[in-house]
Image (cartoon, rainbow, N blue to C red; front, side, top):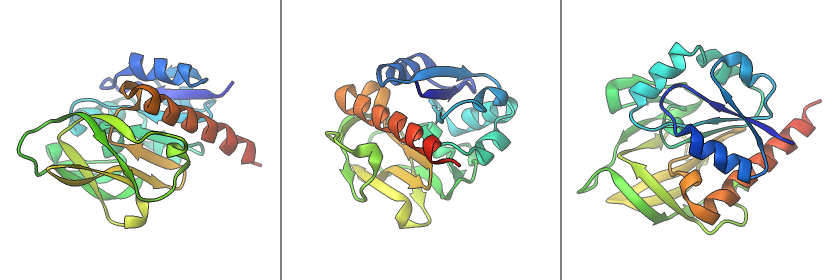
Length: 203
């Protein structure tokens, strides 16, 4: 069984994401220390609240170097996706720098953006294979990629925004797959499958 580590940095919806991954066929380890990431075939970086709180928890837990140097697939969810970038305008926070770009506040008449929205996949990606691209969002900020080749999917709320990204084995989604019913479960199942494939390919 594929083992997925969910990073416990103190600002994530750990129960829901762990249950979603278990339904997707994974063995889940909630990792409170970087050492607990070492035996995982994939890593999920969840996040709720603000980028400042999430990055503070990542630093406090000693996860920065481990996340930057990991060899297995990494999936950031919501704020966990936003901290993959260089910088966020929210809390003027530096991120992990795994994907070039910055996170900025949405230009929308009402924030946060809460609810179900269609997602347009603009670049084929295994995460979205077989999904009905309607997902559940809760956010006020979204990333702007320096390189458009990293953009996998877009959505619109007040303005078009980036809904999913990829840079090699690092991926992120702005929505919450663990709260997105069948489509979310399929996406998590695709992530678990990609982790298994990636590990089998390591010499």
